[in-house]
Length: 450
Image (cartoon, rainbow, N blue to C red; front, side, top):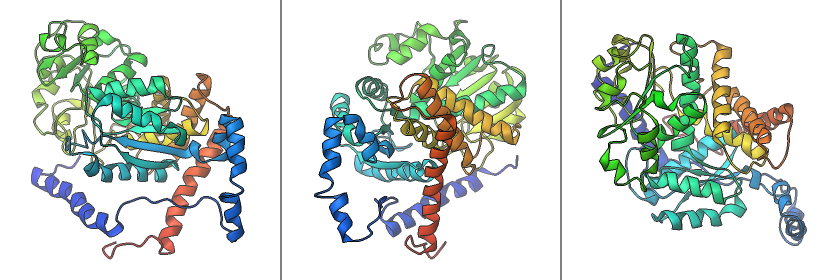
């Protein structure tokens, strides 16, 4: 891995922001509504709108399930935020969060063929926020929660999953967990270890790591073999600061009482000592993770240092300290743990079977699919997860999630494996070819710098 200086990397980091500042006003946003049905003549207005549209309305009134056949609901996803945790910028408000939600919608469409709509809600109260989202249910086939501060993000996800009859997904939780699980599967394969035998040190106790832990436990990790650190140190039952707020931070309190079987106390250094795997989703580095702490890990250590824009330790420093496999959140280093590998394909699959929810088991199925896609190309220490430009992985992921939904009895319709594959490929290919055609015809204009 080629070394770069901090100054060189910071210059590289600045470039996307500079381009974004130019191109966002050039396009005035990134998405728009386009047509799916043709207008052959003005007579078609009588079919698509009044008076003809009254007939499908009557059919849906008589049988509400017909909405999935007679409208595009099964391809509509709401990308919802309250603006309280936008990227690494914090609570900047719903208006300032709109560019991010538009970007998410763009990824949904291009990578998964999903019609996603950014919805930024000016409401911080979690219960009122939930009521607003619930009221949107008749229009959408799924909800993607985005950039919501903790601890309310856990409560909002849990409540909406219970009270809505469509999939509700929080990408900061379930998305990160899915990709991290996929990467860990292949990393463990390379070092010859099994998930049920490893010890894991986790740095950061936010939405991402809490869900990663939950998914890994369901996938076979022994809870007592995990140690989790927050900004104040290792989580354990004697942490009075958490105990006093256990009703508010119930996820942290659960971790205090169910992990760390050796009863370790201290900080990151102590947590990493003797660990096989490090999963860090904390603050940007470098210097958050020390080289000597990695040296104290077991042989063939696996390190996921996922902070952006700069990982908790430079990947080459981690390798120098003894790590065998290193993953980050950046696209310019090997092994990018990127949520965009997950949500487009996962939603494609659950929408195609009109699923009622997305379970952790479906996340595990998606993770296994991603791991298998990488194995088909040949995994190695610098390639443990697919790249975003390998578009066929989204099709395989959609099939895996659709089949898992059917198996769990939460799909409204049953499709075969081949039917799921055809449906996913058709929709994803259409989105990509539509973009290409619009650019070629000049309908989407390219900036002069392109």
